[in-house]
Length: 139
Image (tube, rainbow, N blue to C red):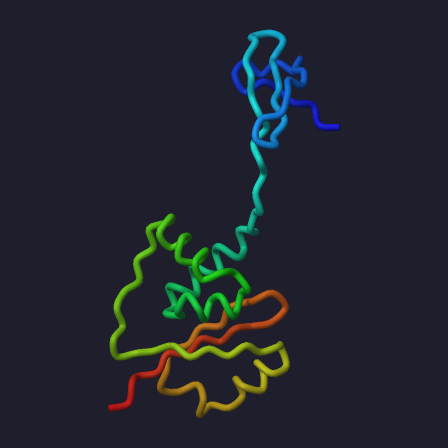
């Protein structure tokens, strides 16, 4: 069992003191401070935050990031706002992405025609690899 401590004086001598809004209330025996335990929400691993922000900066939309990582596009949008991420405008380029396993990636990179005429980045995505390729809009 987890031993609680008073958030005010850090004393470990606390007793239960009722329930408020379906949350257990406690009383510190030393300073007579009443408190409730904070609800621990769903925590998303920092890997997904970093990867989502990276993909956003590479030019993918919130919905594309949602489909790839399985994290809500609203959550990705909130992360962009929270970390104050600004994307530079690349009006004449647009990203395309493909997801490969290791062998598929090796085969794709063997074809030199697919490597010329575009910028590209390869990033790890769990046990697969994501290739993001920027091509110029055709006039």
